[in-house]
Amino acid sequence: MTLDVSTLLIGACFLLIAGGSLVYIFYLPDRIYLGPEKTRASYLRERKDVVYENLRDLNFEYKAGKVPDADYLSLKASLQDEAATLLAEIARLESIASLTPRKTRS
Image (cartoon, rainbow, N blue to C red; front, side, top):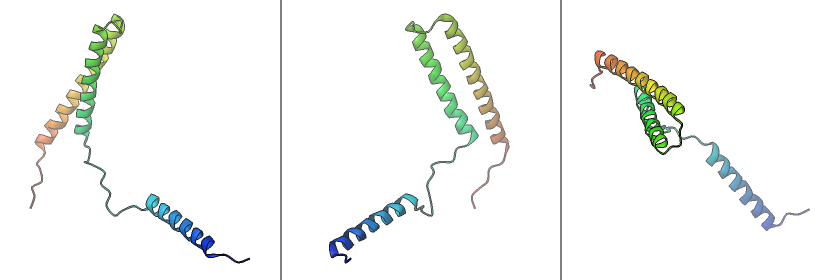
C-alpha cells in the first residue's frame, strides 16, 4: 500500500493544526496579568455599591407598586442593616490602615 503525496500533505496539515491547537490551548506565558489585587476594603466598597443599588431598585419597585408594604419594609431593613455592617467594617479597616506605618520606596 503506497501513500501518495496528497495523503501525506493532508496528514501533515492535520498534525500541524492539531499541534498548533494544543499549544494554543495549553501554553501558559511566563507572566499572566490577573488584574489589580483585590483587598478586603475594595471588596467591601464594591459590595456597598451593590447594596445601595439594590436599595434604589427596591424603592423604585415599591413606588411602582410592584412590591407589597410588608415585603418592602423587611427587604429595606435587611439591606440597610447590611449597608451599616459594611460601612462599619470599612471604617474599621480604614482606621487600622491609618494606624499602621506605610512602607516607603527606596
